[in-house]
Amino acid sequence: MFLNYKIQGEGRPLLLIHGLFGSLDNLGGLARVLAEHYTVYQVDLPNHGQSPRSQSVDYISQANAVKDFMTQQGLDRASVVGHSMGGKVAMMLAISHPEMIDQLVVMDIAPVAYQERRHDAVLAGLNASMRSPITSRKAAEAILSDHILEPGVRQFLLKSLAKQDNGEFEWRFNVDALERNYDDITGWPASGHYHGDTLFLKGADSDYISAAHREEIERQFPQAKAHVIANTGHWLHAEKPDAVARVITRFLTKSER
Image 1 (spheres, rainbow, N blue to C red):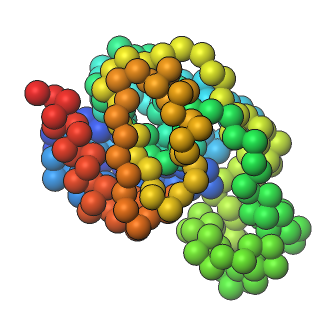
Image 2 (cartoon, rainbow, N blue to C red):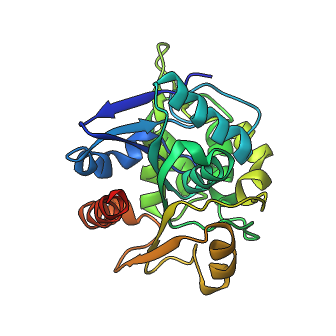
């Protein structure tokens, strides 16, 4: 599998991995800042963006796809930053192939199985939008709004709505595979450890990482440090890209000494 990607900057290699229903562009603001210090690789995960489709969305499969990407790019080692689902992919990559990871940064997700289904309304809106050909972004948003109340969430999803040669629009993520295997996305195969330098970044107003997750974080990532980004939610990198980039750069630089 050959993942779609974008490269910018110069310096030591740094991979950025987006979250569920996203694409490499979601981390563009963070990438621009980090590219002042690193060669930044942004990737579209399988079933997202312009990367190939697959019926497997489990974290071992996704981590292997990123590992193969690194091999294709000639990267023996790299630091990896992942947000949400992408953070779980990054954690699995570090656990499975620690020899390839210099440092690990996980943004607002824990190495646990989440019981709450947070995306049912999103999936309902996406399925409703696909019941007939999508003729415009405005039409798609109107259908999504029947299911998704938050305008910001609708705008986030619409970034992955692409116009086709026939004039119709299609989603750039594989809705069917993501919905059918949603338990793999919320789940976590709790096994293994990564003993390298690790930073967990939490949005202060987000509940994706809580005190209840501390034991599992420390068990699986015994060198983990934590940093809370004030006045941000789950999308901390979009809300405060400069602050997040500063914290990441400070962590990576100190780790390299």
